[in-house]
Amino acid sequence: MAKQDRAIRTRQSILEAAAVVFDERGYDAATITEILARAEVTKGALYFHFASKEELALAVIDAQMSTVPDPSDLAGTCKMQQLVDMGMIFACRMVEDPLLRGSVRLTLEHGSSNLNRASPFNGWTEVHTRVLVEGKERGEVLPHVVPGDTAELIVGAYAGINTMSQAVTNRADLERRAIVLYEHLMPSVAVPSVLARLDMSPGRGPRALALAEAERSAGRAEDGQLIAAG
Image 1 (cartoon, helix red, strand yellow):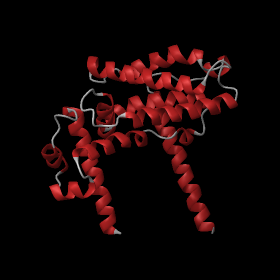
Image 2 (cartoon, helix red, strand yellow):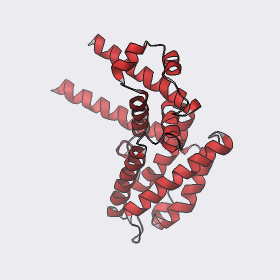
Image 3 (cartoon, helix red, strand yellow):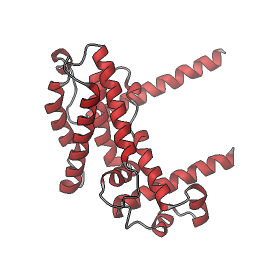
Image 4 (cartoon, helix red, strand yellow):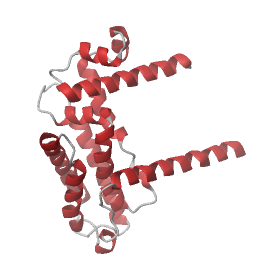
């Protein structure tokens, strides 16, 4: 078990180190030597987990979806608040999470054509579509809204503000740009009674993260009680 835990930690260290290098250098310019130095592991350890730089980059890209809580972890909020919270949490995590920054750099950059950069776009679109469908079933969404089309619009628009924020302010204003996006978008999506209750104010990302952690902690405590009772 200890050996397995050590392998998991080593893999995560390599992923995080690679993400930092990819974020700083881009895929084409990044080298395995730089990643090894950053991770402080041997070449054998890296190739035990990842067969190539491409495989490592794809793992960094695929890690993007796990950096933001699933909307189901925000069970105490309405579906349209969950929709907004995904983007607000994303902006918050971009400041503090090097794995997310590296994943986003690889996803959005125009470099090597060998990388399949579609998975985060498809993943975020599926999650947004699901939340919009559930919101529509609950009467939170305006009748004309087509969940799949709206989800693609949100994901594409967010990628645009992400790219612009990176180019103009090195992501320093991503939260502000996300707020502006949702302030313009949500009146065309949410019914007025729900729209009036949405929190799109500065600092919503950290508040939503705290809410998600509280939900997870409550779930873990409940599971522990069930195990003890059993």
